[in-house]
Image 1 (tube, rainbow, N blue to C red):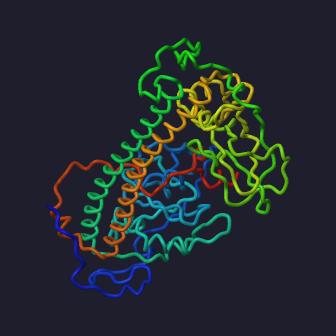
Image 2: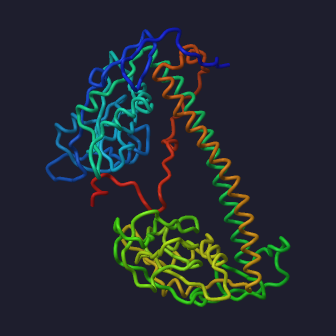
Image 3: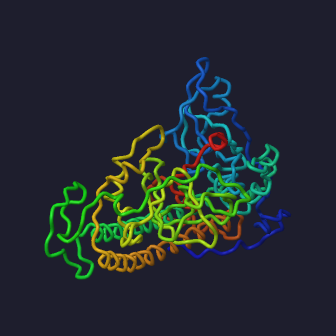
Length: 486
């Protein structure tokens, strides 16, 4: 049994605002006294007069808190002297030193293993711990703690892009317990981290299963496999003539999608400004069947025909293949709202319910069929309204559409409550992990006894970080800083 953690017997003032009191036998040191700093000059280019390398980049560090030679890296070239200086060694720690968001500055990753051709890329700082004062795995944990990370955040300078100077990195204050104690801290935190990650992965699997359950409920209802009034199949069916759809209830119609809408219209080509009062929707504002109107930015003037009305649907005609054709329902806004040219507005034809059409067009089987009609190009796909409008869809009568919508909204609410419950548990454990790391590496809790009593277990690799709450907008990939500039 692991004993409860307690504070150390005695403390002293660290004289560092962000660290507060530290155990009386600990030291507090600047980064320059703990690790050697090397800032890479190796970029992504391939030059004939240089040697081939694998480049560990900003994204590799941002998305993974462990860097291992077996991972997939970008190919590049570098001079022999740069390879020697910036080659990654076991126990090195990398941090992000440039970013568009200041809170993304100083994100660390520990190098585990070594390869002759694996080097640190531009936009990263390489920290090589001094063997007599610091263990790389402890430095990783220290940099993950808020008291240390915050020092890097406040030192970041810039307007549209933030960056750290060499002196700012070297000047960061770090807690420095004796080396044996650093090993104990690492052992304890790695042990706890593995359990936290297992718990989170389990909860994420539960959420995935719940989302699949919801998709299945919607699919069976909007394709007529189940009569939501009885929970049983319909009495009679007929062939739909559509491969993905199969048989449909005998009373339903199967028609080209365009017949369910008055019009399918392209949006405006102008870009949003800071001063316009007409909100402008982009593909990033369509998520999970909903339209999320931005709070700021827009256009000063738009053709009246290109403003949205409650009940309009928007479909994304240009995106990556796995995201093209997603649909969102506009429910209204207090000021005028328009939409960008790579979105298409679809205005339902009476008596069809916008809510039913939204659920149908976001059905996973329909989306697969729609994406087969998309024309792929480099990094994206295009599905124009003509091709989209020819796709066959099943349509029950008006009253039945309303019944299906009511049933699916109730079912979705039930599943969403379960998902939110699991998500709250994940968030609670994430916060616990953040607090635990900070309390242990700054000496608020003494883990020496607990670490000594931990059972010996097979050292499973810590999985890539799923922990910091890195959910991003659909369709928006994390870019290297220079790619973001472009």
